[in-house]
Amino acid sequence: MFDEIMDDMKLGMDNVMEALDRDLQKTRTGRANLNMLDAIRISYYGTTTPLNQVAALAVADPRLITIKPWEKNLLIDIERAIVNSDLGITPSNDGELIRLPIPPLSQERRANICKQVRSRGEDGKVSIRNVRRDTNEMIKAIDGTSEDAVKRELKRIQDMTDEKVREIDEQIKTKEIEIMAI
Image (cartoon, rainbow, N blue to C red):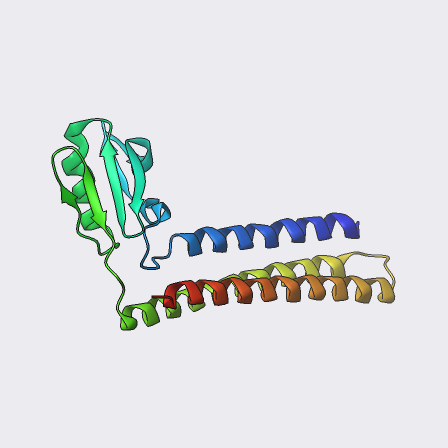
């Protein structure tokens, strides 16, 4: 019975870690990164479609992303979607290709992004602790178990929680170093 509950907890914590990892990959660091464009959607024959499904995306150099739509008539829609997004990048359109020059980040902007990253890390820690709380309640609700067995399982849960919190701290620290590197 304990093993099933622990497996569910591990799955829940792993899901939190994956979500945080995806979120951090989208964070702008001053370098060209295709994950920055994951949230951009355009209208393609009446359907909202992710950008990477209507165009070839490439990192031409560390500060430039190129977007080559499969249909030229999408150039204006893609350009409009990028301008309306929260990327803060102005695209340039040459009639066949859209170029996204990634400007270097100012020190103030880097500090703001670091603050956002720390906030996302704290949100991840809260989610991990919520999984811990739910698991603790399930363990305590099992009838017919000894007090020692419950304490042992609660300690295992706390140890796993502490490990995940340490992993989040390491991820955040690594991302901050990446952001602050000029």
